[in-house]
Length: 431
Image (spheres, rainbow, N blue to C red):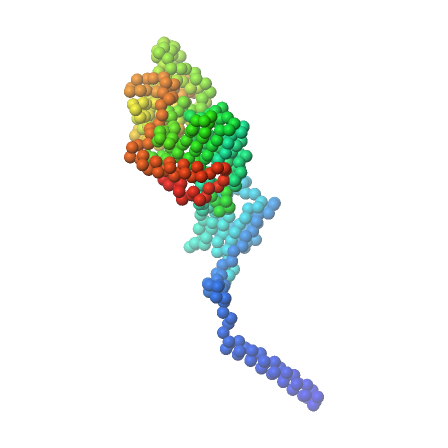
């Protein structure tokens, strides 16, 4: 090697040695100096999370399988998710915009969990389990809250509720209006006829609120109406295993018996001391009312009671008999069949499904033969419509007065429709 070449090589070696020396020094310093500590406000476990969360959205024109493919979910997990989804939801209802959330391990990159929202109240989740994946449908957590709607009628109660302010969503107002008409004053007030401009109302109700602020369900707790200067009030109260509405004195607002046990087309035969029987071809008493209705029309108990009979009754065909309070009883004949669980000794509530219209026994066509008895004697069902339900039992009067007073105070503090969250603790009780 020539001298110039040797000089160039030596220079290169020196430069390499210097570079290596510097690198070695930097390495030694790095080993000797401790790594920078995580900030004091950040827990050590969060310095490097074990999992990271991701989300992807179903795009227009693609399948759920394609979306899951982008998450790199393994085949077994994909199958488990799709199988569970089809069990709890019609695949045809899955629309673009569906969000699938998943978590990945920061160490291996493997998917450690997948979830998607089925509807406003349910979420489908998958987690790794021994030999596969564990899938479950979970209810969205809700919290209980109360709201008060108050105002005055201008054209109708419905319009007054719909036009109100105060942060109560319109759909929620609609639900309250329906509950009010169907369950609180169904016998006392005809909301389409009795209300006049200037009548006032206050409605306290409980709402189960989702994390997004929408209400999943509602139930009315108390109502105060001023209709033409006359006061009407109602308070929900839990007694004998059921919720009912009572006025301020503890008297039931429920009539003891429904006007009819079914939705019927027409009355084909009325209660009569003498009627020509179309099959027996002779005149005899008709101790009930025949309601013409379609085959399979639901038949409901007209009042609270205990099933005394459920089976074949000769000319009555399939028949159910119910014993009610105060010596009353009701009978339902010619039914096609009975509702599940309807058998002697079972307690039923007013409006509960007991069977279906048929044409069994001595019958010429689908209808329900309905009888009402008092102390063993048949009576015209129309004669007992004014009877009220049982009042608050004496042993529950003190508890009822406490519930009534608490809810009345919550209503009286409100002069207009608004959310009344500060009243939550006061009115949420077992009344």
